[in-house]
Length: 204
Image (tube, rainbow, N blue to C red; front, top):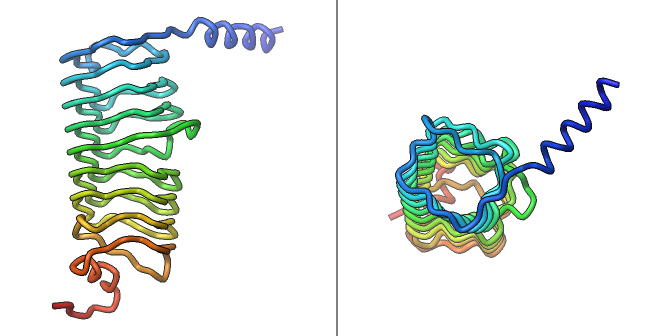
């Protein structure tokens, strides 16, 4: 009987989940004011703080985050579907914990240092002008991803799919062709030295 009641209660919680659309959240500190669990569609978050906030099981659809700090936020089963981050701090985020269903993100002028995309599918994602120092891309699918003017210092690429990935304008990356799939990946002449790091040779 208890299990039956628990199932009914759980079903009720899902049905009663709130839905918010076309709303602007400006200069809200969600580390002090709780963000209501629910689905947010076409909402904009500007100058908001989500530092260490639990965003688990919240869905963001066609939303934008601009000048926000989401560092160390919890992303267990969080839905990001066609979500854009611009000039945001996203330090130490575990994007692999996000819901995989229709996962789609774009980043412009963001700080993503120490974040992780372990085993995440990121096909056609654009990283523009981002700091990606020590980001973990292990076993991720980066097919057709564009890294435009990004700092990839100490970023981890291991068993990563880099087919048609564009690194031409990015820098400080180190990628071992022996342990990554790099078919038709794009590099500048200057960037080629990032493929030779393990050989400890000088490229001039």
